Image (cartoon, rainbow, N blue to C red; front, top):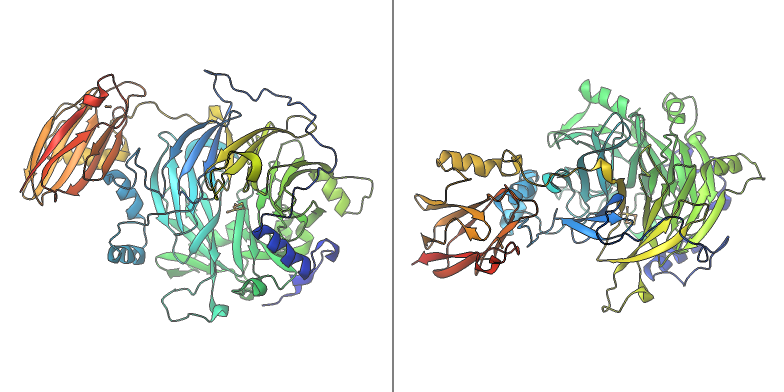
Length: 638
Ligand code: K7E
Ligand code: CUA
């Protein structure tokens, strides 16, 4: 597994010794030692340069897309107010929308599963996985900035990627990635557009994972996946060494990169961290595409797979040595560099995209692609940018954000002793993971606001029991100094957030009747010769019963319907109100059913009428003064 580049090039002075490394790990587990003092001047005395209060009735300047972590959902916030505007159900179940229970959502949650998952779930009596773990949510790009079409998000637990339609803020496709357990890092192709959704599978496994190889972990493999963001089908996979963590792409459509830990390819903590170097793996997209087109890939599970492991000596990958266990991988908005964040090493490593041409051509060595390595503090996890040449790195162990200048860091690495790249360190409360600044992952980075997503809140909020909220802090970065302006509590666990100028996101207010979300229900109604906007009627088809009804405040089109015990019943509700904000709901008592029907939408749900008696359905959205009266009865005869 060793290679000449493993220990080449970089000064050892920036590395932790192995003792300090384990102490750092212990610190991570125990929420750090204490609160670090402010280095390089406290900002607490400074005033925010911008208004951060958004007055009642005023609108925010940015959308913030928050991953919902272990809840499996997404959240949409307004920035700078930090008001939570909505939630988007993704991998979770949601009573407000019926996500995970309606026919429309179940189709999306099941159709992209791998055959082996479908078979497994069936035996468990489940239709789909019922949890998810979202870490990285990113809106789609055209020419290096957000285009408002889609947003993609990973499920680390079940190796899925979901696509959200930003016009309705609902998921429309979910794909499970083959040969992967735990899709963690996710970033998008920026140029010419998205394009690829790059997915890191974090855990090494036998491929195929069919039980023939179990404990022989040297035979495990890891894949880097490019999903086609339009078709949501896997375009290709590349086998890599080590465990992939985070990923990012350039601004030219030529390369992507991933941080990679566990170069010793162990399975215990000691084994995984027993080397001083891991890698930033870089991927040559053109070489990969050419090989796939020429049929050089092995087809596995219907997906072309190429070997980009070191031993294969391919032109698909290069392994740039960086200090052990790097974490965040962040491309600078000027398109020139990406930064690998040290985590166990107190450094960030700056790698120049343009040097990759020479690297893949064999003209330079791996370590020569590195143009800077700056000591920033303890536990650097993620870096964001202000578009003015500065970078902001979270220091998990120091509980700080460190602001540093990219050009100065490069000069210092070249030996210039006159520059001081570190501009400021600001305490945050506490243990930050990701941070992100407004538009920072586009060529339009504008350096106004930064959010620090802190894992621990300890003393910052009223005590809510042993499990505390996270603390998402808003920081003004528009001036020379960072100024902390706001705390915002968050339920577990918003790993990451993206801040997007509001003019780039343009959701609709009322559904169009030809929306693909409910195309199946519309087609079913057409077969039944039902006009969804006008008809409310029951159609019996053997033991299948289809109940069509309209909803218009404050009435359902049917005040009752009758079925027989054991019938398979499909209720289809169409909201014919053509009024902004006038959403109705449909809940069936005793049957565990709930769904949202927004203006001009159709929603449907199927169940077996196994409980005899009288059951009420009611509208669950307070839609009218007579909302309580918006109800009807399902009569189930024995
Ligand atoms: Cu650092 Cu999953 Cu992006 Cu958490 S990851 S923090
Ligand atoms: Cu419709 Cu309440």
